[in-house]
Amino acid sequence: MKKLFFVLALLLFMQSAQAQLFSKERIANLENFDKRFLTWGYFLGFNSYDFKIDYRNQLTDANTDVVVNRSGGFNVGLVGDMRINKYINLRLEPGLYFTQRNLEFPGFIEDRDRLREVKSTYIHVPLLVKFSTKRLNNIKPFVVAGISTSINLSSNETNPEDNEQGQFRMTNSTTYYEVGFGIDLYLYFFKFTPSIRGVFALSDELIADDDPNSPWTGNIEKLSTRGIFINFTFQ
Image (cartoon, rainbow, N blue to C red; front, top):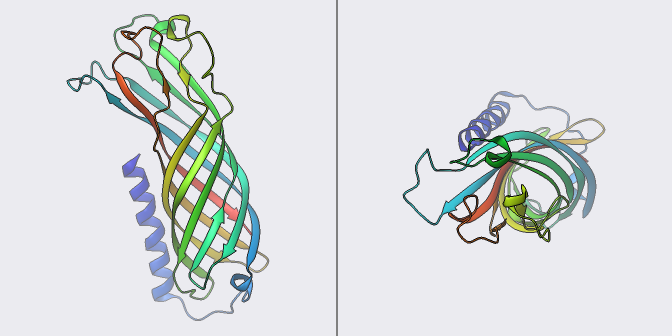
């Protein structure tokens, strides 16, 4: 995941650098767009969620670790942007995020014990600070950072059954910090913004099994989400 994040980052910044160094002066689209105090929009995108797992027994190896198999998901949401000054904006980006992760636990033979499908539907609400560079022609790179919270609509936190009955339980809310970057592209009728963000949970999301020696959760100290969002914003 980290390698993918940095490769995409490198490609995006190389594209920006090339545009700034070699493009000629062009007619500016939406010249007064960034002078507005409040702007609105929406985004569509993709996500890849993962889990970071800390173990109680630090002597785990590849044969005893829980294997996390990721699959791509998609995002949709709204954008509210407030101008602080020429280079700083405050953004609220509430959205709906759909994803699935499959966990494979060691020591089991049958799939009903070994495999747990973790399907999640998140209402994700980040509060972000956007730091932009000076606009050049019709592009403006930026970096973004902030905090966020999410509600997992698929959570089974209150389910009395646990992994003994095939139920892998997670908390219904999580807090995160986020960092990312993107480029504002000023088109004739609207502003189009591709961006990439890394998302890292601050809280433990695991609801442990009732048995403290559970073969599923007994050796897990902390389980927390991390992921990559690729969003395309229209304003």
